[in-house]
Length: 204
Image 1: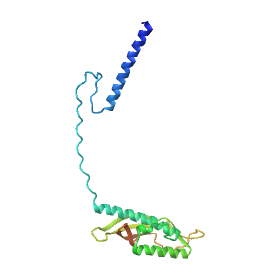
Image 2: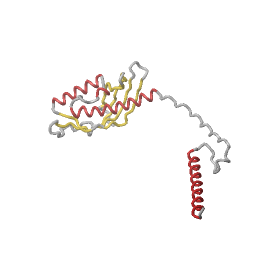
Image 3: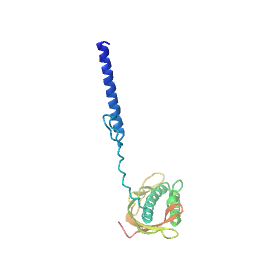
Image 4: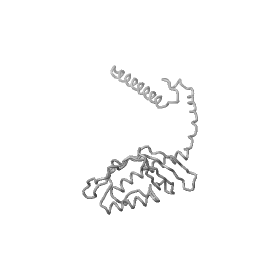
């Protein structure tokens, strides 16, 4: 064999050795729980199993009252979203107001928006619901109920002419921030605002 042939054979063995070592290192990296040795023929000891992870405590079931309170607050927020939509178009058609209002409150919204449409008026802008708080909650009743108190800011909710979109004059003593007390009930399809009681004499 020529010198070149011996050199090629030596290089081939070296490359094979490097390839074997590389594959072994890769196997070690992928096997986190098994011990690895640079010489696989001499490492015959069985791998030690990893200690069992401590059993986590089962999660506590949610408090029904806390769940109900969260649902009430969520319903109230969505109720005002739909109120803004209804009054902006002077109609409840195409809105989801019936998902979040029922009883006396729903009837009142339908009547008021209908009257606004006849008068050529709209209410545009937004209402800020500040510090909504569930002050009373009874989920043991046949129809669970809740009382929610909030601070309504209607200063950016403006009455406008339906055609010109110009603001219409309002009384100078108009109260733009006031305490509002709402009654909600949980019906088969979810919580709904049943009544609103604006505390006109209480600003916030």
